[in-house]
Image (tube, rainbow, N blue to C red; front, side, top):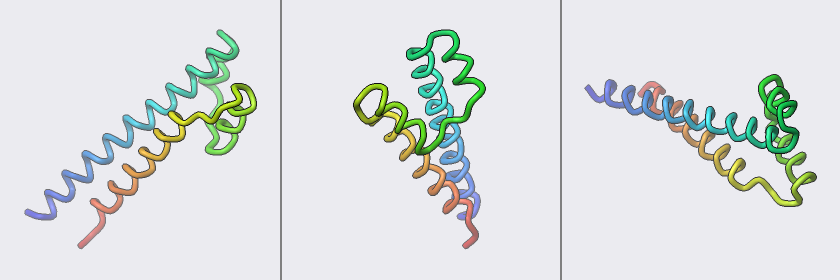
Length: 90
């Protein structure tokens, strides 16, 4: 029974990590759209947000760190870690 509970919690963490990752990607596309308009939307859809590259580009363009993006990225990593620990064997 305890194993099922851990698996259920792991599934919840996994689902939350997926949602957080989708929000992260939507933020990425929205920023590209804000910068470049329709072309930025296409760039956002085609390209992959780099862990280091996108925040550096954002900093160079806006002269501030993308704290919301980095916070959401950290939450996503934490949820993936919690999911992995919950699915692990006893």
